[in-house]
Each structure stands twice: as structure tokens, then as C-alpha cells.
Amino acid sequence: MAPLWESLIPNGGYEDVAFIFNPDERDYDFLVVYEDLPPLSGERKILRSEKLTCPKKHTLLITTEPSSIRIDGLNYLSQFGEVWTSRPLDWKSVFYLDRRGCRVSNLPTATPDPLSSRQRTLYQQRLQKTHPPPLRWFYGRDMEGNDHLTLDELSRDNSIKTRNLSTVTSNKAMKHTVHAKRLEFVTALKARLGDDLSLYGRGFKSVRDKCEAMSAYRYHIAIENHVQSGHYTEKLTDCFLALSLPFYFGAPDYDRYYPREAAIPIDLFDLDRSESIIREATASNQYEKRLPSLQKAKEIAICMSNPLFRAQHWAQRIDEEDATKELVSLSGENVIHGRHAFRRAHPIRAVQDAAYRARMKRHRSSAAIQP
Image (cartoon, rainbow, N blue to C red; front, side, top):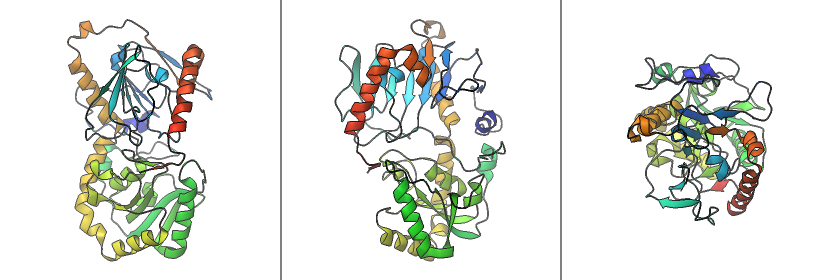
């Protein structure tokens, strides 16, 4: 995986921050965990634990899966100094600060507080214009090898557009997300548009790299599997990186993060209207008219959807917050466990987390549409 991560580093590196991708490295000042600790050799379930060589305050978990896929318990999250996670519907921007100093961004307040007042103090702050957790893009990512576009190559990429409209989808039909509805929508749209729409992905024309499905196209249909305010994925940012104008069904507030003109909203549940929007946009050359907004969106995505760009700014911020490095303590619990290892190491806390997840599932929408 190192070549993939290294491709996200600009030529010359990041200022004052050097990234190490060896999971067995024991000399580091900050630890960033993306989704979970890496597995040990041959593991199916991750049982790795990391004995920290840095203060807990210097640890960050980035978790990008929406609540329809993954809910982490607060005991598990409290292992980390800071957690970045998607913000579900009606959840205010908050920090839960526990006695061990964990700061967890964007946890729920619209549901019963699962934490006792003796354990945590709730601090609310005004919702600010911040981006969701950075989700690695797939455009320029070789899924079968290590031939990834570098950050510099991606910045310079201005592929000539010779084709009109494409989409990348799959024949998955899961009901707890919009997979099934997406497949139905795309299949029906293909029947109406015919050769004007090119289908790529599992069950259709397979590709090793989304570049093959996007770089030559002016327009791209992008449909999120989980839809809520404040949550978008590489399905949107890949369009920006490819400079392909997206017909987008997803975060209704995408324009908090990117220019409104950089995408054209469609409705997965209104096929007739969506077809009309697509035909009108292509006939009126909206791609050429909106290209400046697309280029601006690409500039933003290269930074704000890049986990390493965001992580290096986090490390610099934490470093500045430390009054002196001598005062940063390594005392207290200094081990971070993978998700399955945590359950073995802390069975009682794991049961509490399981109860928390069950409560959260009852309070969230049963569908994956949360506008």
C-alpha cells in the first residue's frame, strides 16, 4: 500500500512533516490510523495493537464509512487523541471530551446522550465550514498494481474530452444503501440514452483505473451509496479530478465545500426529471460553461480530499498547541487496539460499545437517504 500513499505526496514533500508507511516503525511523533490498524500477516480480522511511542494527543483516527455501514463505539474511539468521522443528519458539530483527553469530532446530539456526566463533558461549538473526513480518491489509482498517478501528475492532468457521458456503477443490489435503487436507475437511464451513456464497473465494462471511465468524458453520473448532509465520497471528487462535470445525487450541501456550478444535481427517484436535466445540460454545453468552476473544485479536492495533506496540517496544529514538548506526557494507557483486538482486550467496554451501536441504529433512518 505504500506506493498508493506515496502518490499523495507532492514532489518535494510536505513542509516540516515526513510520512512513514511502515506499520512496524517504532520512531514517530504522530500516529494517523486510516479506518483501522493494518492487519498482521495472514489475519482475516485485525488483531494488531500499537504500543504508542508518542502521546495519545498525537494520535488521529480517520474513519470515512457512513452510519449505514459502520458505527464505532465511543470506548473504542476514546483510544485516539482525535477522531474524524462523517456528520450524520441533524448531528451538531460537537466535541466529546473525556477525562483521557479524547476529542471526537461530529458525534450525535440529536439522540439520547450515551455518556454519563461523570465520564464526559459535552462542548458544543458553532457549525463551521469544514470538510468531511478525507476519503482517498480512485481516479488515477491502479486497482491491480502500483501504477498510480502522482499528485503532481494529477494536478497537471488535462485530458482531452472526446466523449460525452459515462458512469461507474456495479451490479450490487444491497437494500440498506441505495445500491439497488442506483442499479435500477442506471439501467433504466441506459435504456433511454442508449449509446450516449457508457457504463463501467462490476457487472458491466470493468476497468483497472477510473481514469479509463472518466478522463475522456465531459460528463459523469455520480450517485452516492449513502446520502446525507455533510457526507460525500470519491464519487464526487473523482469527477472534479477528472474535470468531468458530474450529474450528482448525493450530499445536498455539496456547495458548502465546492462551487455550486461544479455539479448538476439529479434525483435518483425521478427518472424522467433526471433524464431531462441530463439532455438539457449536454445540449446547452454546460460542460464548457462550467469548466472554470470544475477547475476550482479540482484545486480544492486535491487538498481537502487528500488524507496526507489534511494530516500534515493536523500534526502542525497539534504541535503548535503543545506548550512545550517536554510537557506532553506519555502517561496513562498508551496502547491503541485494532477493532477486533479492542474487543478482546476490553470485553466489558466492548459490550458497552455494542449497546451504543444498537441504540444508534434505532435512532438513525432505516434508509440510506438522509437529506
